Every structure is written in structure tokens, then in C-alpha cells.
Length: 143
Image (cartoon, rainbow, N blue to C red; front, side, top):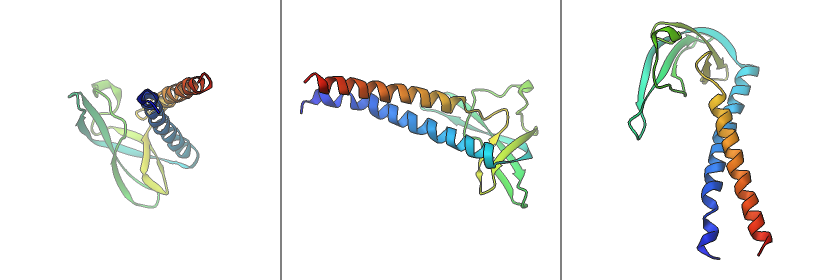
């Protein structure tokens, strides 16, 4: 086997990783929609994270009390480049939180957390994976 056959593994691996990430996020959102409980929460702070390129992302930390009395405080999995004064997610703002009663760490801040990112990852992953598989299939059939 020639090393050239290893080249399609790169987009296939990237596509599979993107597809897995996107599908996981969409399934998580579906569980929250079907079995989640909505309660009032409050933004208590923002976790500030920097990526490898030095770009800053703000992840709001929501605090709420579950229906069975447990106090929860978790950071959103999605961050944004800024938190503007008028966007409704400043520290102290009341927000609606939808959480999974079986595991409150799985939650979404309504209006902040979106499935758009998961959908984009799913589409890009599908295109990369399917495209690479088609190329490999054509290469195998033309041997």
C-alpha cells in the first residue's frame, strides 16, 4: 500500500470528528427539549477563556435551583467574543435555564445556547465524510 492512500484519512478523520461533535450536540438539545425542565436562573459571572490564537471567549455561568431543591451553578458550553450591555446576559441578569433533571450539568441558557453551532458541525462533518468516502470508492473502483 502506497503512502498516498493515507492522505484521504485526514479529511475523513476531521469529518468524522466534526460529525460526532455535531450529532452529540443535537442529541443533547433534543433531550433537553423533550425531558428538560425550565426554571429561572441568574447569570453570576462569566468564565473568560482564551483559545490557542489568543481570542477571548465569554461563557456565562448560570445559577439556579432545581425543582428538587439542589443548587446548581455551571458555565455554558458555548462562548461568545463579547457580552454587550443590551444583550441580556450581563452579570445579575435573570435568565431561563432548561436543564436535564437526571443530570443538571446538561443545561442550556435560553437565548444564549443555540443548536446552530451543532448543526454547522454536523453538516460540515457529513460533507467531509461523505465526500472523502466517495473519493476513496472511486479510487478503489478505478484500480
